[in-house]
Amino acid sequence: MQTIKKVLNSSVVLAVDENGAELVVLGKGIGYGRKPGETVEHDAANQVFVSLPEGEQRNLVELLTQIPAEYVELSRAIVALAEADGLTLDPHVYLSLTDHLHFAVERQRKGLVTVNRLAWEVRTIYPRQYAVGERAVALLRERLAVALPEEEAANIAFHLVNADAANAGVDSQRIVQLVSQVATIVTHSTGVQLHHDELHGARFVAHLQYFARRFFDGRLASSGDDFLFTSLSERYPAAIAAAERVRTLVQKEYGQTLPNEEIAFLALHVARVLES
Image (cartoon, one colour):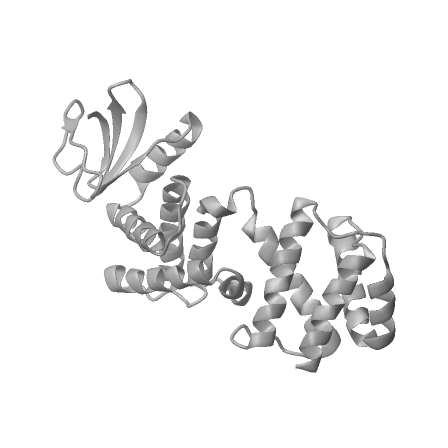
């Protein structure tokens, strides 16, 4: 059983449980006409109980006192869609997603349109989250009569990826940024346009995603055997040239030198794209 400590809006209350621990309770109409000291009946089917560290709890409370209740309801609906699709999300998502939705709508209403230039990569690397993002954009249009650009699905997907327990410790923004940089170099070097809905494009981006994860985890392949690198240099010079440009980028932007084995693997996939 929880006791209301503060009503934040009609859909959110700050409560205290029987052990004195504070938690934020989200539920449609849960705060309507309620007062501090009243009890909140536990309804797991229609309520969300968010327990966060003290600093983040304060941020969430402050945020939710400034944002209309409908954005909380939208966040709950979007999280429910994601969880129905098998995603397990950290409670932090309610803070980040609610804030983002409100800000995105306010920007759109003021005519401040922003473009997510990584939307293609997000859609390819995180298709499940992107699909939920698309449904979220439709939900915003339906409930708030605001038509956000299609790229907004990628922004929402980012929040879902970052809150996904399966991606704990993974910075999706950095991964997508690196994948985008590498894909751009390959496109400019070879003249081949990568399309996520074509098999070779999807395979190539999947390889880049795996590479980026290993890169940021410090798990790059490096056996010291340059046989593959030497063989590909002779057989696929254009692919190796493109991969070498990636090595230059990574050295310049991230201060790390990619081993020949990684360059060979990348060139192998570039050659595959060129031959498709």
